[in-house]
Length: 299
Image (cartoon, rainbow, N blue to C red):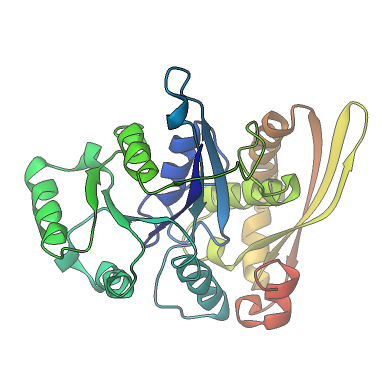
């Protein structure tokens, strides 16, 4: 069996988590249209048995990373360090872009990071479903001229286009070895973590502008009973004014977040869920080492 690890990197909001979910065929990583949705390293386990060609059996652990950017807070530093820290510990790197290299400094910054790394690299040009052919060609040519990528593949993670081709390309760099995880396991992240991420995703979807990026979710209690799972979670924000906006008039905004999250958590856990949400203020937590540790962003 071919096994190994693959790091998925890129700027914020290029579709890394959407691609991971498409590879696995189910949702384990939250994905929104807002940048910096992913804050933690999330491992997705892809296991495939080729019945007619046993030598093509594979288990590949894809590592979804936070978007690489120039950080402005300690949380941003943690996110970027978490992403770049995976680059030399994997068998292959998948670098996702959705625009021309010459359009901004973000992708150039990542290219410079990759240039000195010998790990095999595959470039993925994502969102081709919304991209004119001439734009795709310009992006392709720009990156091909760099001469640092073993392959360049156009995909639509949202529509699942060319995802199989990417998996085949990545598998070429995997090595023969034992399975790392049971074949029915799709992620090593615990349920409590996934639940907190689902709640944070709904905050991102329901709120606008800067507020979602100043929120964190902490699971206070997680009790599994015979016919129901009872979950209590606290949403932390940085300002008192943000607290009122998250709760909304008459508590409507918070109720909407809770209802949407509860439905998805029930589908995840396969049981009825009683979800209780609270909102608290912790000023400037994104620049607090203690708060970042409490919320699971630092060891």
